[in-house]
Image 1 (tube, rainbow, N blue to C red):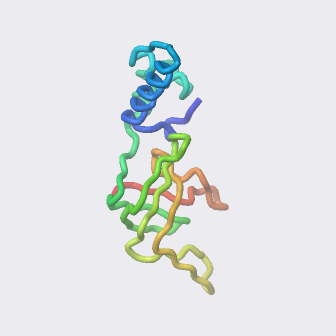
Image 2: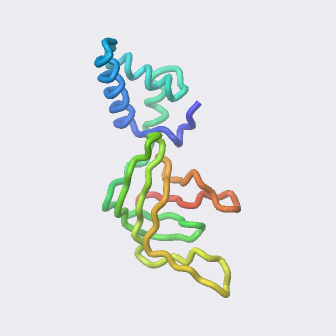
Image 3: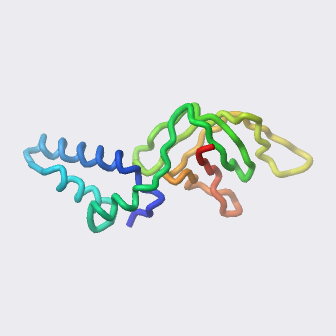
Amino acid sequence: MTLSQDIAPVEELKAQAKRLREKLRQTGISLSHSEALEMVAHQHGVRDWNTLHAMAGNRMRLRVGDRVEGLYLGQPFTAEIRGMTKMGDGAHRRVTLQFDKPVDVVRFDSFSSFRQRVTGEIGWDGRSPRQTSDGEPQLVVRPA
């Protein structure tokens, strides 16, 4: 079953159903929109559209130009979203952030490495599926 944090917003799920319906129509299979929504729900491992709709209702909406805050490799930041691309699986987005102030990504006192712009992958909950060695997400993004 798909975890709720990996489910796209309702608008994207409806678009998936529309694409599915159109693709099946091209092969001679007629499907109502509600039947397509039910099929999308089953693809996400839930029993019906109403369940999937409820799970997807609280997904974070982010756009290029939005102001965000969060953590990058455990370091706090404020930034502007400079780029965003939906990943092929539909459950993640690649986001490019321009930090307001450079972030030191090294935790050693004797060495520093500052980043001003980073690109990372986040789920619809704003958390990176990749983790640091201590088990925390590499990137956490939320609206500022």
